[in-house]
Amino acid sequence: MPVLRAAEAFATHGRGVVRHAVSSGRWQRPVRGVYVTHNGPLSPEDRQWVALLACPDGSALAGATALQLHGLTGFEDTRVFVTIPDGGDRPPALAPPLPDLVVHSSVRLGDRDVHPVQRPRRTRIERSLIDLASWSPSDRYGRAAVLAAFQQGLVRAPDVLSAVDRRPTARRVGLVRESVLDAVGGIQSLPEKDFDDLVLLAGLPRPTRQRVVRGTNGRYYLDVEWAPYGVAAEIHGLPHHGVVQWSADLVRANEIVIDGPRLLIFTSYVIRHEPALVLDQLARALRAGGWTGVVRPIPTRVDRWPPPTQRR
Image (cartoon, rainbow, N blue to C red):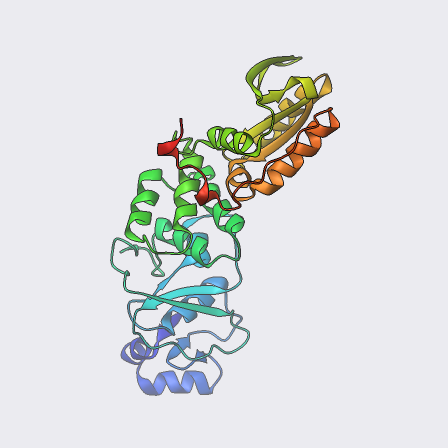
């Protein structure tokens, strides 16, 4: 390995050899206590090793950095995320042109959360997803990463849910759990029932469900429709589709609107977390079709809606 801690470099090569290699320019020391056994640009892997070895023993690459190593695509980050043992010393500042180092601490860095074999040492993919969601700039970004991990075939729902159970106080764990259930199509996600509750609470006209629409490529089913007003809506539980499924959905949507109603498409995330946006678009579409009713105000927080166990 081209990146070594000082103790390993001295034990393997001898202190004098190491110092001469650095002074002669054949090696480099990008940060105190870490040596790189070449003088060229650091590869992405070199940069990750430097960041990790600058941290205390027991540390692990985490979050977006670990997820990239696990094979997740679409969520790359030039920063290096490392989780160090709780109470461990923070590493010294890394010199340019090394990436920004983002350090978190945790008491949970055993084999259940850190892969015991893979190198460089990294948190398991389930733990990494929870960390990315907790540290991400928005709910949307964290949710998209969880859904992408399922779409790319990298995780199983029981493993992620088990990791969530071990981190009950982590930020956004509720969102991670919800996203897992949406990704696997679990009955607990109930995106269409959430939509029904929203329509009922706001006093919108009650729609009809699952009307058959015939197109050139076969039969399609409308999730909900307000036929008197020429409006329909689709509720998607999994917005992070693969290209093939995404293309098929677009064709299906086109077939519906060619000779049919105006079609609005909502994700379960928007229904649960941005209900005001959903109601605004629904009300404007219905009014364009002749509805003259009034939208009742609703709670702005989804956790104030009736929980699933209390719905009838």
